[in-house]
Length: 379
Image (cartoon, rainbow, N blue to C red; front, side, top):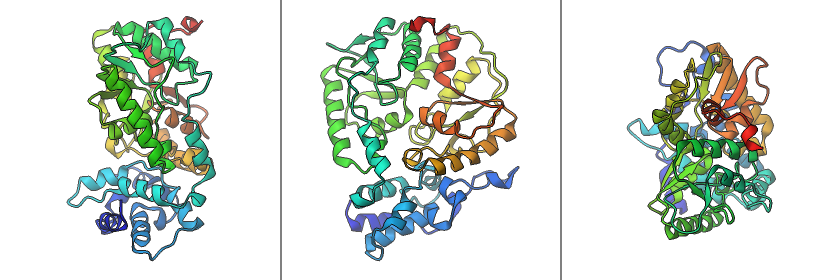
């Protein structure tokens, strides 16, 4: 993107301030009235319109990159609310596209070390655990493979979760494969957070080539951050779907036990909801499992980010914790005793300083449990 293009996009923002708030007219608590995690926690410069002014100043040459500007830029979780909400109005400012461009062009010396280190975690570990899937009938891709499970960075070394997913796939009766011995590059938003355009393009080129070579038509993805990157960047004809959609469709035809839990509430992951437009599947699952769901005030496409995104959990865990506390305030107002989410990063961040009497549970674990998974299968 040229400076002229960046300026043109940034000038779309007329600082109306609408993206700061929620769409509901009646608000039960003033704390639920605003939306941007960084803006509602700190100052105007951290709000969407402030970030658009930052982009405008950089594009015009009126601002020069320094540590203070970097601090503002990397406080943003890239949750996408401002972008999504702006699209509902008469004039669209492509906020996420602008912020991703700023992270690409910021001098390397100002990129947080923790975020640059996180990019290195996208390398495939020598002791990766994808072979766990084989005992559940998931075969290593050799010839043609219609449907595969993507080995993302949250699964490669996560044997407990791979056991749950393998069990669910086995119960589905579907033929699903995986690149086990030679995994696909585990792309995630860490590449975008770090402004690693070349690395992302190279990884996507390899992914597209290999799934086309093996005739892959559908790719099931566990990590919503990987899902949104694949959907956005892939040039292949394959369909990328969340594991929650796979599970919801499975439960339409597969009888499952009701899960006994007290009242629950649900956290919409930004990369599953706003980025991938998958709001229905988790709710279909919770209904099938017989759960009593009490929605938080900000929910669906108005949902408040947990605070982990944009590399904030990696780079500023203290800030991510403050963002999470905003969400917990709303969750406690529901009276629910269980917080369910479909994102491993929401799960990790919401466990920071969580109320003692509320549990955080991954929805895939609940599906496995409802289908009869006990943990003994892993042995």
